[in-house]
Length: 345
Image (cartoon, rainbow, N blue to C red; front, side):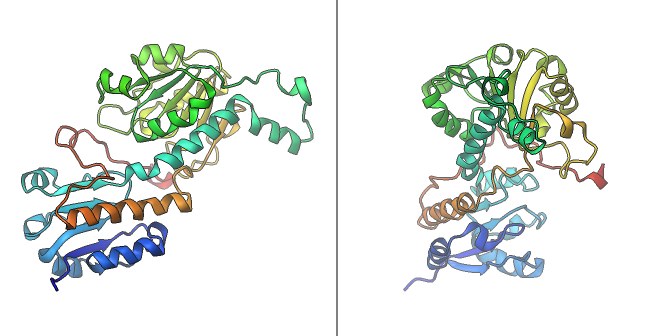
């Protein structure tokens, strides 16, 4: 019987039971000789001892330094953090045929579902109605609907057309909403092939009633949705911000929401936790969520399912099928996903 291949499993900051169901954990240990596999960070000396014989490394952030030349057998690095690890030497990985994979698509269904729910809540003023009840100021029937509207048939615009957008598009289909998309990393032909209409950013902002901001943070798009862009939005446009606050001028966004020019539903904020005195907390037409869209238990278990499937493929000498692989054309364009804490400002 041949010796099992070696896999370093160091998922911290994630927990083993958070991302691996009992079934997938059993699969994982049947596939390979698992080194570490605990919730606590793997001590660096033990990592270095295991590195020369490792075929695959499963980790969150790359916190081990410039050690890849010692990994003579390494074929893949799978990050369970949610994005490609940017502290890793990508050029070395490309040159030595080491695949770098991200579990980002495992969040697509969770975030898409939350996006739909928040969009409905915004246009039907569900949270406003709930607050009115709690304050004993509720309005019944027509009186409680003077400024609400429906989603059916309203144009939807996706800023960023990755896995979240494509899952969300499926959920919007019953509402008969024409879908337009702006994504400079994709060709018009690809967007059309997925059933959406490619448009310029200006056309999207001026014509979409529902604007879903789903773009990944890059070195090129920090606050690219600035005040002049946001002011092009039509009256009562619903902005659903689900990627990162990195991509918007959040001060300008807050001003427009407070002025009741637009409506906002957001799961991401410029500083987390959000300062207690931030004015967005007092905006009537803001629905605020504490970065909860991608943290549902059964959704997190998709991480373990996809990681284990692709690990099996890699160990069998096959290409991974379920997780995206870092591409040379894009490797220098991703921005670090950093959310500053209030005491770090």
